[in-house]
Image (cartoon, rainbow, N blue to C red):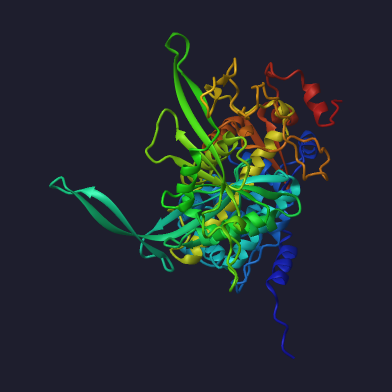
Length: 611
């Protein structure tokens, strides 16, 4: 009788049972008591990078992201010698630590014993490997033989695109369930080119023209070809966490994927959060797609192209606009005697009832003509002057939102820059988004890009969660800009302008009312969707908690904080102690630093009484 073929799930379960795999768990009190009674520890190391994984893994468990990762399967694997989640954690740790080269993993990651122990490897695996196969080929100068880095690369690259998308989408769903996002979200979408060489299999090709000066000083058009892929990401502008992604060839247009990405993001977030506002640039000027978003109840803001009929209509209607809106921004530079001020003027006009965008309409029905009065209407905000600059062709924002307060639309589009400055730049500079793929194949690029976005999302959520644990998080205010606003209105009949007596704050906006009144400060945002949280009044996660500290500075701060700490292992249990605390627990006599009250206080912290 033929044997029943094993599934990947059954193989993973068998391996987990055989190896008794689990990530190490932290229990400071239990380890402290074992040290105090003189038990021999299995491993003792300085903390270093392990301090980052300590809190990171705690967050993975609490948010149930680890449960999603444990269910991750790679259907392309024929033989599984370790649980699949261990390969995910290894490659994810490589991204988290910023290791640029796969060949550097043995020296920079696989040999980091405390990190490997936290992930779930035991000391024998770290020093001897899973088997003795290839032992003779190992270099004599390396005593660590966890696995060959190409084994990790080949394994993770066997994931199909569907498996990678499922992993990312389910991780975002777990974060939404945990209450990471607001109930009603403002998002932005944009794409970035992932440029490779022509030797990558499955890469796309894009023709790019550029004007340059030749040796004679004449401007000539130069045609070049770039190869690679395009990564399209939908990002939450409150937390700066990517919530949906799509990878296409580099020559592909981004607009056709807009509705697909928004729908996928809604699935990832449901039923805990939903998208209410979307900000896009000129690459997404697609009336058909934007009309679908309008029917889904999503507000949008986009910048109009100058060759659109709606652009000309907005300019014509602006002549009839009853009011202009002006804002003077005073920028302060320097300190003390060297402090200088510079005023920048911005002037807006609001226009309503624009119906001349032909493609922004319901689907065409044969034999039926859509009258102009029945077409869906858009509104517009025209930027006549922007920071003292008056362009010949003003910038026009089209929106299906109200323009009663045009500054809201203006500021909303300004937030779109976060996807470029807060996501793509950090991903390329720190998270090794480009240039360090495990393989020069389509599978290698898909795997690396997905894992980078995955780790970026979870690491950002962890940092926000870590900040929210602080008792002072409620007092954190958004960073105050080095400028002030004075908002003025002018009526169409040249009436006297109204102005506020004092500059408003950055978030104050002018509403056309008979009198200009001081707006009330809005309350702190809360998790409207997270009613199941133990504390429904919890302050919502926002990227201003991070006070402008990027991933690189974050790692530097962790290194500084963990400089004088040790990590102690007893089996799969570990603890982290300050060096003076560790010396007290092990009975080493020394002069206690003034930061610590007494030896008895240290022991009492871990439930120990000195006899």
